[in-house]
Image (tube, rainbow, N blue to C red):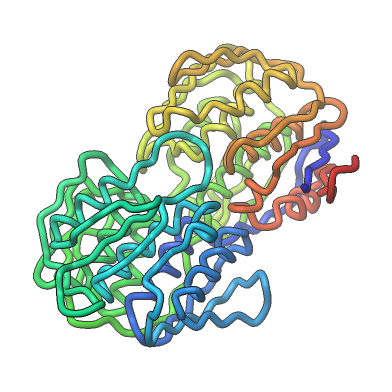
Length: 431
């Protein structure tokens, strides 16, 4: 099993180019199931989850064409879907597999999707997806760990979903995306309320509209979708990864470095930039695709609460906690999205951090002198937080279970090394 070996203490300097957004690329690839025509998706990050999604679409008899592996460009053609199923073997490592449920129900009226796996950061039930599909006419059953859904119709294929008025009980990104895709081919109009407003949702809407979907309400909590008879092929480039961007902003600040971050969208970083500036980090917007972060000055504590977009993303909480260990004063970090997302705190404590956790709140006293240790990643973003801690710790830090970070960060070792970090990937069990 691969590990990261980090020798801390080096300020990061130079330029880092941001990859495409994993959380935009996954629904974009799933959306290709909505049409029989060719769909080309570009700026795909070369990470494990996207490879898994490609395998899943291939299992469903879609033709997935790439020129290399891992790939940044995918061409997907699904003239006939002979397997309306997402099997456990492919779903168990990636929650985003649930995003095939909406397109399958829209296109075929039938789907069998394994309950999803992924990061162990708390309950992320799919009930909201299922209750919405039931309002659209689907019959849902659970059997042997699988969601079995069908719109009553003739023969093996199901009927057509019907438009409905759906109010999500709580904001759900994948739920919004799934039902949005399902509604594009439903009979009549679907109104979705209390929708997620994340940039990745808007990016999906842009792509669906290119395919012929009729959608209004981009960037708001209410979406209106008028179903069409069929969608056509398209070409789409996914947006830059805002979480990777935020991670490198913290990396520049925590190491006292000077990083220029290119190929990003600064407008998606408003909450992160505001919070980092509150701690004393210097961040400037160079142009529409470039940010610059400079550290080295005094950093002070600032409380942070995770919120749905446009608030501070839960996916940036672990990275911010790493920064909080290095600032002067006490930071209160409140996690409102997931109930089990402080597992990285105990690993940072092993490195010398002064952190106490009570329920959904963590109190971080800084600055702490971190020392290298062997730590274990519990989920994707926790991995990034531990990498950041390792960058400022004295001695050697070994991070185990880095397959988590491989799910969502393209070439993070290579990008950090190019900016001056002393980090390497060690294969196998020998260190």
